[in-house]
View 1 (cartoon, rainbow, N blue to C red):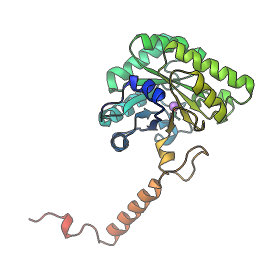
View 2 (view 1 turned 180 degrees about the vertical axis):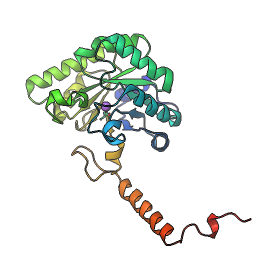
View 3 (view 1 turned 60 degrees about the vertical axis):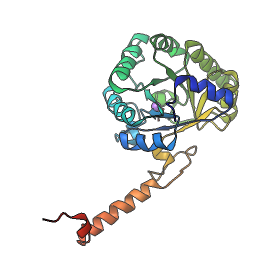
View 4 (view 1 turned 30 degrees about the horizontal axis):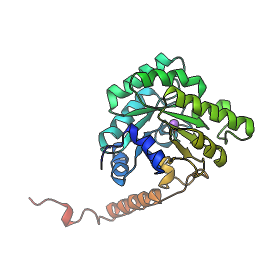
Length: 266
Ligand code: KIV
Ligand code: NA
């Protein structure tokens, strides 16, 4: 299997082959997902709530993204690695975005970045694209703006909001974005955006008429008790891990582990 590259995005869309993307935050999961055949690995700032113990993505720093991206990129032999620019690392200007993205490229080995927003970051996308950094857009519910959007809510409902979302998507495409993530968008609106764009759409809570899907891996694998409506649990890895940990505790406490096969002779 060859490395998934930027030209494969449009090729998949044209051929009607769905794009597959999961988040990854470390080497262990990245190796598993890379070998499982994922096209794209997203080093998401969802690390904030999923591995760093924060309430949301807002506190995540560029330094933390660099550490996570480096460990994912080391393990990803085939999947393309896409890294979120975290809150506060790009909003001020296109130049700030370029500086942050250049840091990610120089220090991690990732192949693309993702930025939340539409028209307001079109100039940022154009500058990065011109510098040779592929950019993924992110529209609909954009977690970094949670405070402005009034919580985790479906976006693009109603004709006017749907029209604005499509305008934002077109602005991103015009600026050179290579794909757009659509999060918590009514399925018909995501389908419409997918139809009018040349670049692929990757949905999360955006229905099935998009060019690909992304999920947060901890939701996908059933690591926690709760996951959002749009996140099907494809496994119960959290329960399996808990079972293993409890078995370990009990075998150590009962002196069953280690057995003779786990020890060294003199
Ligand atoms: O950080 C993240 O996990 C994301 C996905 C939800 C698209 O941005
Ligand atoms: Na994100």
